[in-house]
Every structure is written in C-alpha cells, then in structure tokens.
Amino acid sequence: MVVLSQPAALEHCSLIKTCKPTCVFTGIPVIDLRDPEAKTLIVKACEEYGFFKLINHGVPMEFMTRLEAEALSFFNLPQSDKDKATPFGYGSNKIGPNGDVGWIEYLLVNTNPQLTSLKTLSENFCYEVNDYILAVKRLAFEVVEIMADGLEIEPRNVLSRLLRDEKSDSCFRLNHYPPCPQLQALSGRNLIGFGEHTDPQIISILRSNNTSGLQICLRDRTWVSVPPDQTSFFISVGDTLQVMSNGRLRSVLHRVLTDSMKSRVSMIYFGGPPMSEKIVALPCLMAKGEESLYKEFTWWEYKTCAYKSRLGANRLGLFEKT
Ligand code: GA4
Image (tube, rainbow, N blue to C red; front, side):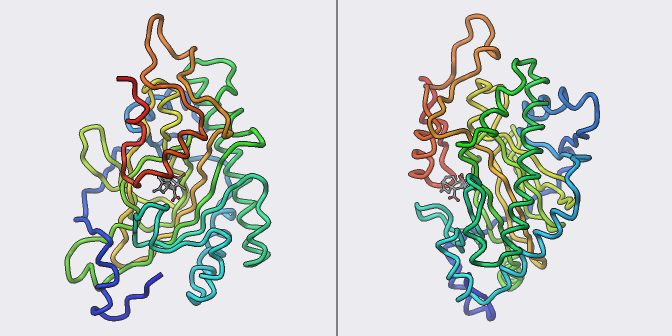
C-alpha cells in the first residue's frame, strides 16, 4: 500500500474518496446469545437494521487477539514482502476487479477447503487463521439456526445447512486500514477505507479492534457510525438472506472510513451457499398468495454478476421482479 510520509504524496490517493465524519449511533441492537429471547431479538434487528452486535457469543477472546497480533505482524512487513503474498489473497488499495479503490490493505481467502496456502507466509499465521475460522463458522451456524427458530421456520437447519455444506462458498478477509493523518488534518475529512456496499452472501460476521470506522446506512438513508467493541461480533445480513426471506430481513448497506490516528484491523467471515444452490424465497416464510420479489438465480449467477459490478452497485436490483 502507498505510504504517505509527506503531504506531497497525498496525490497518490487522489482517487480515494473522503467523507465527513458522521454521528455515533448508540441504537445498534445488542443481542446476548444466552438470552432466551435472542431468537426474537435477532429477527427484529435483522428486519429493522440488517445488523446487530452479538455479546456472550462464546468465542474466547484469545482467538481474536492472537489472530490480530499475527495479522499486524503481516501488515507491518515491508511492502515488497507483502506483495509476494498477492497469489495468496493479499491486495492493497484496489477492491474487486472493476476499478474500486479504498484506503485499505487486506488478505482475502476462500474458507473451503481448509487453508494451507497461508503456510507459505507463516505457519503460525496459518494456524491462527484456521482456528479463528473454525470458531467463527460454528458461531455462524448457531446464529442462523437461532434466526430460523425466530422466523419459525423448519427444519431449523434450513439456512445453516448451506453454510455447513462442504461446498459452501464462504470467504474470510483480514482488513487493515492504516490512519492517514496528513490528509485528515488538511481536509478535516476521513478517507474511505471500504466504500459503501452490501455483502452478497447469506451472513457476515465481523470482529474489529477498538478503532472506529464502520458505518451503516439506516432505513431513512442516514449514515451512522458503529461504536467499535473488540470483544463482540457484528453480524450483517447479506443479499442472499434478503432474497431467501423475500425482503423481510434486509441486507445492510455499510462502509468503512479510516480513523485519523489509529489503524483499524477487522476480520470478517462471509458465509455463502454452494455455487449450484438455487436462491429463492423460502416457501415457509411466504404468506398465502405472497409473490416472490426476486427472480430465481443460483449463487453462482449472483456471484458472477456481483464480480462484474462496481462495489456500490445495487446488485439485487437486477434480480427484482418488475
Ligand atoms: C463485498 C463483500 C466481501 O468483502 C467480498 C467483496 C468482493 C471483493 O472484495 O472482491 C467484491 C464486493 C464484496 C462486492 C462486489 C464485487 C465483489 C468487490 C466488488 C467490487 C469479498 C464479496 O464477496 O463481495
């Protein structure tokens, strides 16, 4: 990633957009996984925000801190060493294949089968990534099963079977958003680390360090900042779950701004279905006579279309019935 050591170097990032800071939102639903009411509260949060914070999730903090430490040692390597990791999923500034950019560097990997390629970077890093993914996958299965209970759909594995499938097309990304104090001092604005978008998959499970940056877009189209919490997970509904619930659960539009002083590290598991899976509204969620809002498609078709689109595009719009 381009290192900005002097203001003249700011020209390098002229393509990266900036944004005024927005207000901190204290209304994010907080769900305690041990609460007997969790199923109802999760559904409510996904209907209203497509987003919630999960506490008492049972994933030991060491999984997060150990991976964060390994991730930082990797991101602190000389650029030439990190560039050697491009075949293993390293990227900087460029997001996706269609010209989107952001003030970010990342590692993006597929989670099936178990990762071994990262061993080339560091054995320990590879172990930590795999341990973390195992733990967070288990959590994802549990969350979508509780969600199915809340939606009163049967069998309760109707969603989790897609994530549990050995062919599930899920991925994992480690993001590093270095601060860019010079630009922020000059403009009073924050650089956009990851531009606005919805996640195409079923569900995303994010954990970050205590640096702010994540913002979500509310129903009334206002953007609000999510207060960071390194001990919790933040769960987002993806486009696929919006379709499977026929629009009842909404995929949340979100973005990340860089902090002016501190670097942000986030780790996200994106749980997707197998490529050949047909994505349709679950019949058990449809009222009598209710029409499906979306045309039928396979996850492969949707993913292919997503990778042809710009980050901020309304991808689901193309599949809406007219
Ligand atoms: C958004 C969610 C995940 O980070 C991701 C992203 C993917 C990428 O970074 O390669 C995409 C983006 C994401 C959606 C539209 C396409 C694909 C960048 C992009 C412009 C890994 C994913 O699955 O979709």
